[in-house]
Image (cartoon, rainbow, N blue to C red):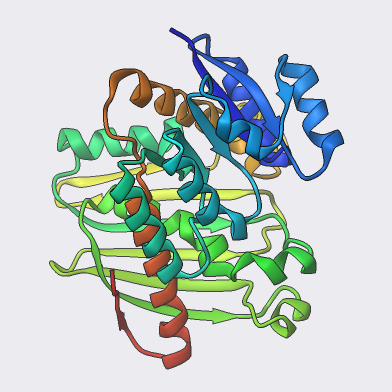
Length: 331
């Protein structure tokens, strides 16, 4: 049986998911919808899909599931709409920028028995998964501290900053999910410090471009997160889990993993330039996991609840910066 999928949103991330679907023989992209017809047409022609409206996709009984890659302010409405239509849903994070709206959305999903998976793709990165496997095997004992470094090569355009929801809801939200993924315990309190060190325009828009956070669980386990909108040396993505018996880490990845040694010393190629190339394998793996869940009838993960928790952590971080104190997370 082939799972028939529809893509809502034909922008940059929509193209990534369309490629991932094309690589999975168990799935077929049959419809594409976008506010810009030419964007939808480009993906449709490359994949053999049809360009359809959202109304047409909702009414099409042959479509099993939808991949939501539309702007954030449409996510909650579309999740509710397609959950009611009985279609499984994969949605890019976040569910919404407002935690109360996200809670209401999840309540609707629960009432109608909807199936939703959230796009926290970093859980599917093979290097980060390898770290988690060592934790699960007990190699490093009980996890005590997690360190996450996540720095973008450069800041996004001002127009994006205006609608992003801020650095904690847009960027750190991935790291909140990764902290939970590695700690294996829910976060109780958040401490955060944030500044504008990269671009004054970001500050003028009410956001930050540099942040440091300490997340603490009830048992005292900690996760330390370092974020910056500027890394002159490339896309900086590193994690480490420290435990009672040792530590395990995943270092930065490069398009080509070589090292050159000459009389001038040792050199290596530059890092990936951004998430589109760094997390190619992760994007493919998460779509594969989505198909697995639909075929096997197993719970979809990361779940919509995981998305709500990450959003609650972002809200706590914002309050921690404003209040200059540790903030208890309200789930």
